[in-house]
Length: 200
Image 1 (cartoon, rainbow, N blue to C red):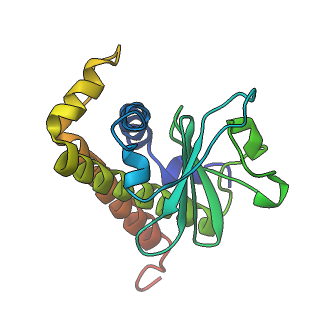
Image 2 (tube, rainbow, N blue to C red):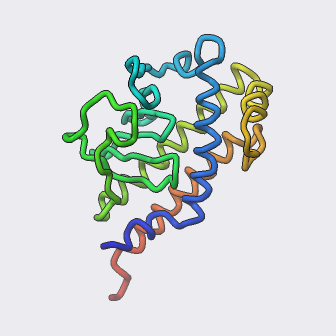
């Protein structure tokens, strides 16, 4: 079963996701300082870090089609398909979290316990579904930001970043949309490969 995660997410998909996620989380961090805090204006609920504690604030909201999303500077937690799937900023490879052992609220990745790779077909399906839901949320959020604040705001965000963006500002939303489509297509291929072969 050890090969399931790599079959679920080819390296190039994880690399692309990591690059996009790093840029987007940087931008979300800047959005906090925009007039009225764009994350709050978009409907997310903030859990502030207690004074003297290390970490990043948590922002929670809903995923389209059901499910819940929590965002931090270090990654995202998607609750859907009966699983809690953590997508880290570093590496982007989704991991499963046992929420029974988590003491909320969480402000550091270590607070999520020891997330583990998916080890069954249903867990791999949940991991793919989480990445698709996250990518679609990010695409929708980027479209919303540009419609509200204009592309000049995103240019300003990225100008403050040390590293160049892997995609132009105007293409960030569509890049997330393409990633969602790639993982959805991957899900179809993987699911079809488990179907019985005709005549076998």
